[in-house]
Length: 288
Image (tube, rainbow, N blue to C red; front, side, top):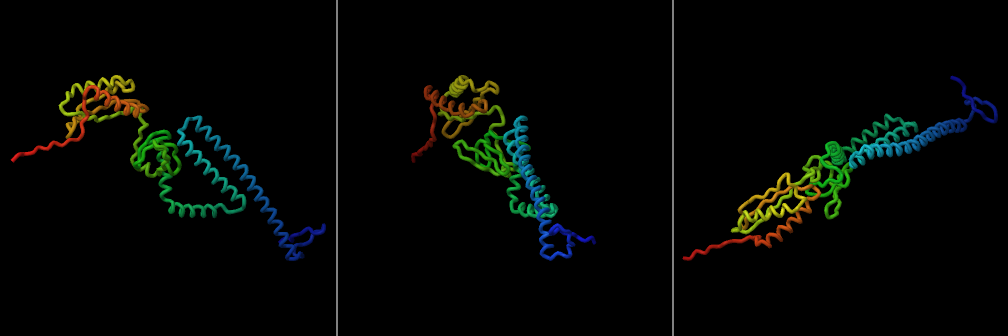
């Protein structure tokens, strides 16, 4: 085995002649230089990696905007890309520090299994978010109803979908429940049908009532001619004759037409003497 030499006072001295303290100092010096090189390289990789990740995130964001990708998909993709690139950077930095990445990967996998078992519900929500983004039963800006809640979709996150209700409450619904449950999307179709059931008194001329209703419907330009408005005698109820009214409007006009037509029907019926009944009970007394 070759004899190691150590420089001291300008002379080469065999390593075996050095004291144990000097040999330890020499090894520490060599280790420090090597460790410093690793740390410096890892620091440079980390700084450059962070700058590169920031650049790639901005690039991905510009590409998604340029391709007019749905805003909910944009936020999901950007967060996912950022997380994956950050994990890759961390693994690279750790390998440059001299830590065995295979052992680190095994430890990470074990920790992942444990965390996955503890957070199985969140993993289900994550999978539900992917299903929502893949099949797109709704998107940001749609009005939906699910889990006994109704509101406008404000954001689709990895684990939750955020709704804003009509009275300005914010509701977080787990994506797992949305992907496996019933979702009513009120914004998907361009047209929507408005329904009324109007009760009138017994004894009135039905033809006159129907004519009055059709005249009111014809004066509202927001009500579409195709499909044509539908008016029919719906039922002979206990205290009223019920008239069914169905019209088609643009989705954005639904509530305006619904509330305004309620007001106009009430005013016109009162004007023409068409009464609105209230529940009544007729009692017949038998004389002994």
